[in-house]
Amino acid sequence: MEEALTWIGALPFAVAIRRSAVLYIFVNAAHILSIGIIVGSILPLDLRLLGFFRSVPVAVVGPYLSRTAAIGVALAIATGFCLFSVRPVEYAANPAFLTKMTLLALGVLNAAILHLTPQWRDAVKGGPLSPRVRLSALLSMSIWTGAVLAGRWTGFLSE
Image (cartoon, rainbow, N blue to C red; front, side, top):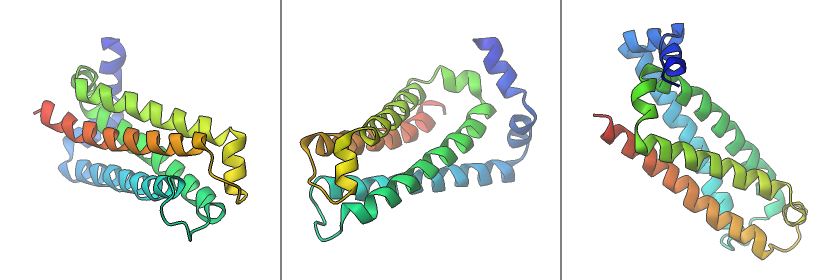
């Protein structure tokens, strides 16, 4: 495992990011913006699924915000991997980082499972919001908020 982590840290882009404060700042900013896309799309969608903003049709915002969140997750994973590559051995041993990765996986899994259910398909067709959809929204809010907190905690534990 340590050999693989060392290999990641030796990748050309990892070396470039490590050597250039400006490049690190841009990658870090891109990661933060990606997280903003995730939270900025998932939290309003989850709140709507929980019954807030009833005048906004789930059929209109559900597919749009889900796709936007998926783009944010893809960008966050790409930029996060670049940041991880700067100090992979240290991050792999950081409990906050491991918590963040676990929550990220759970958040994606929760969304994937929800999107495969007939209850989600009914909701985006304008049907009722089932308890299953509402539970998934509550889990989603908790998971993604926890992932953001764990991400901030990661920086404090690595100093």
